[in-house]
Image 1 (tube, helix red, strand yellow):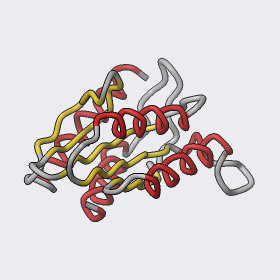
Image 2 (cartoon, one colour; image 1 turned 90 degrees about the vertical axis):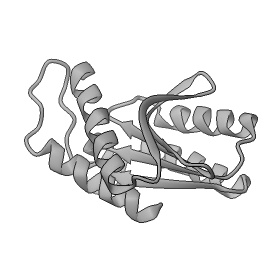
Image 3 (cartoon, rainbow, N blue to C red; image 1 turned 30 degrees about the vertical axis):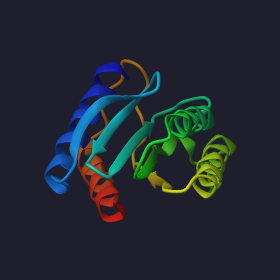
Length: 153
């Protein structure tokens, strides 16, 4: 996924910069020792976007991120968006326990810490396996996700 993931991050950052110019948008922003895919900062807010392609344990990503945010005692509001690809969808409907666990951690952290908000979002594509072609329409999917992030901030 390497280069494709980097291209999606860059596309999301560029799209969010156009949709929400009041934030300074970057990729690979570090919170503690944890890099996040895309982040937007303003004087009073931090928006974090994590894209979950096919991670075996996305709850670890969520827990680590919230742990670092809590330890840094950030001032202002923090919105965390976790974008899930179709990899986490079940064939018979619903989502995998991996995703359910990640969302549980996110919701729990958001209710525990003042000023933290958690938003799971669908990233409507099947992630390619290593070396496979990029899915058609990936830019449109990223644009839709960026609009969804913007609507919630």
